[in-house]
Each structure stands twice: as C-alpha cells, then as structure tokens.
Image (cartoon, rainbow, N blue to C red; front, side, top):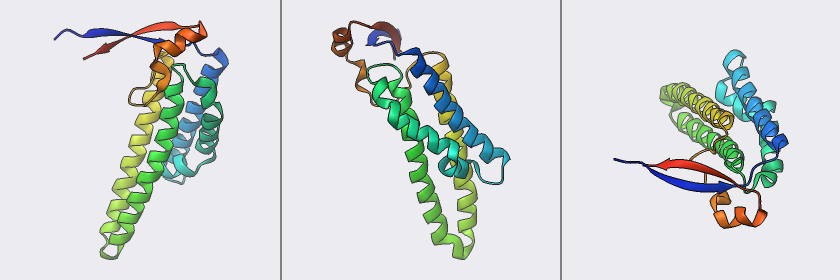
Length: 164
C-alpha cells in the first residue's frame, strides 16, 4: 500500500512560544517525577501538584497566541491530558470507593492509579518528543490546518505528513 502525502500549511510560531511550550512540558514532567520519587502517587502529583497546575494555567493563557500554528495542538494536548486524567481519577476513586467494603476497592485504586500514572507519563513524553521534532500532536482537534487561514497571514510553512 502506497502512502499518500498531504500538504498542511501552518503559520510559523514565535520562538518564545516554542520555549514556553517546552517549559510547560517540563513543569508537567516535574510533577510526574515528584510523584514517582516523592511521597505521593504519580497521578496525584500530576493532578494536584503545583508544577502541573502552573503548566495548565500557562497553557490556557498562551493557547490563543499559538492559534494557527503547529503549537496549538500541543497546548490542546496538554490541557486535554490534564482534564482527562482528572476525570479518570474521579472514576477510579468512585469505583474503588464503592467496592472498598469488600476489599476489592483497594486493588482498583492501586491498579487504576498506577495505570493512570503510566498514561500521563506516556502523554507528556510523547507530546514533548513531538515538540522536539517540531511536529503537531495527533488526535487533537485543531482548526490550524486550514490553508486559507495561513495564506491570509502571509507567513506559512509547508509540512508533509503521511496518510495511511
């Protein structure tokens, strides 16, 4: 099967915005490391630790500056990771709480929060690697791929991606 190349136009982001995106990934990673080597869980430190909370606030504040660039998907990726992790933590907590009377709840908490921590590490690591490669994150809805918007700005770069 031959892969088809598609052309996507993006406005090139300001270099300082790339640096800010690296900082937000580093803050999320710091929260995960604190959870892995500290007294809390990885998921707990990611959701309730200061580094990740600061990173999410920066993501919300700077997301508008990234609109129309390939960095927009990174801001969306990090925000979605945080809120999805919070939702999954609530589900794991409630499921475990319902079954804690028969002791199965403790296993649900242990396995669920471990899996959630692994998922958060994967999301932050894969996003940061894509940032280092100057690629957009996949799986995030983003209106920055419309070539007509990029041509209005007069500043555009062309990226080729494979569609399978």
